[in-house]
Image (cartoon, rainbow, N blue to C red):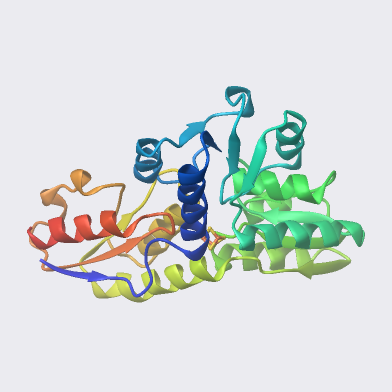
Length: 277
Ligand code: F3S
């Protein structure tokens, strides 16, 4: 099987930075716990456990030592509680996510009603909303936006860093047609954009495409959606073990892309397995 890997795939700047921060902390400190998974990749979280870094579900599970705030950020309330309990805070929030926090703070201070285009259940979005303060709303689609009265509103719009520009643009266009004033900041990060563009380029040139990454990874799910929308049979897998030879029967050329939290060793393993089919 010929396997073509997307021009941009796998671990991004923010994830690499978070992993470096935690690995350094694990060497230097006696107890290091991440608040939730450091990144949305179960295999990487498992590797961290092997070097003594535990992932706690909530602050209630952490009584002492250092607590690492994950790359997708945490709410202001969570930070306050961690500080009040005397925990040592290590901030691994991606600088692009921190930038969105600063943007929404500034928009709210200027009197804009803050809108976050994204998934309301995603921890990155919850953290952005908390930085924006009371009155901020999450809109995941034009349908969501249609349920809100925008008449006379001054609206400041940002995006979850892993959204597609198409969805962001649709929501911005819809609100712009109704609100008094719109101040839209495209806060989709460059790593997301580059991986999405590379997947868009590759998908139409192959018989099928494999998207590798955590099922809980927002940017991996967006990559899978993009590949599907290009018409390529798309398989979202976390590891090589999930590959079913039947999926590629009669095919000679498949594509491979991976989310921003998928380490290179998993991509290499999937590539090797596919080449043997
Ligand atoms: Fe940061 Fe973008 Fe990666 S927001 S964690 S560089 S996907």
